Length: 415
Image (cartoon, rainbow, N blue to C red; front, side, top):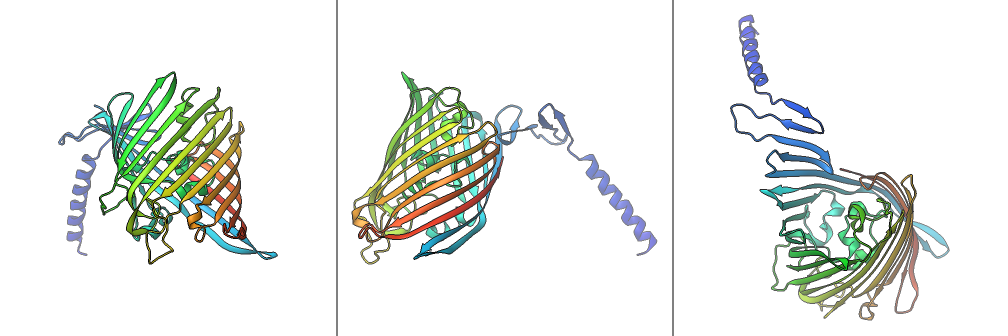
């Protein structure tokens, strides 16, 4: 390169760098927030940045806010089954179980909230049933009509059993029970009204009208799903919303109890489990009933849940007997104790019993699980390990299909 050209290039680079330096946005720390200054030439609204439950961005006039959160669950596990007189290694689980991004905040004013949640691991997308990567989990708006009434519109969890509504990141065990896995009603596109009040005791009422096909559905069958739930809190409200996270991390100083029940009717359901499962060519009606109880006091937490599913036709596909609606009932209970050092031991029993009409397809399942957890930053940063002994029994001849152990180790990191 000639000297003349080299000098010309250096002059141009210096000029460009000078312009870039003059247009830099300067940040200034003010206590626990960050104020971003706008350029003189542009009309940019200053943004406050803070960190509490996630990374929060908000305008000074409170017209907009966005809270950014993420969660990852990395899991290792293996299972063994009894084969005659010996044990056989049957599988290894080594994967990212969940990787999620969550955005929520408000628009215009704090009465109008938005919520978005995305999932990125394959096991979290319902890929096997839907055939497509279902990245979008939640996308809904909440309008706070008054301190006692909320209106929810969009795709989110139905008002079903408590363990399903409690986030997978706030579980007392590595994952939810087989009762929830078999009978929960999951997510749907809905219009839901929530009401909380007090008539002698605190109560919460939820009612929802939804499409019935589950999340990210692109079909409409003319049917709908109707769901409702009532919760009673005879000893008052839980600390920090503790009725919707497992383990007594708030260490309730007085006994707290929540009693709840609900039901859901999915008219002309197009999937084997209503909002979940394989697609059906011939729709059928599916009803789910649930009841649960939660108790917490000084590190002790006790939870029990009952679920039942009925259907107008368990085998809607005449030409394919493998597609059936899992009618039946399930029960689970779990008990845990959290020490002052945030180490917890918990035990869970769960059972799923199929209806007689599907004895030929579905066995009775039972599981006994012992879990040890260490909470470093409540549920956000925790290490959990559980061991499960499970049985599968043929209900026709009462013989056992299998008896086995499953071990799982999981680390969760979240903000």
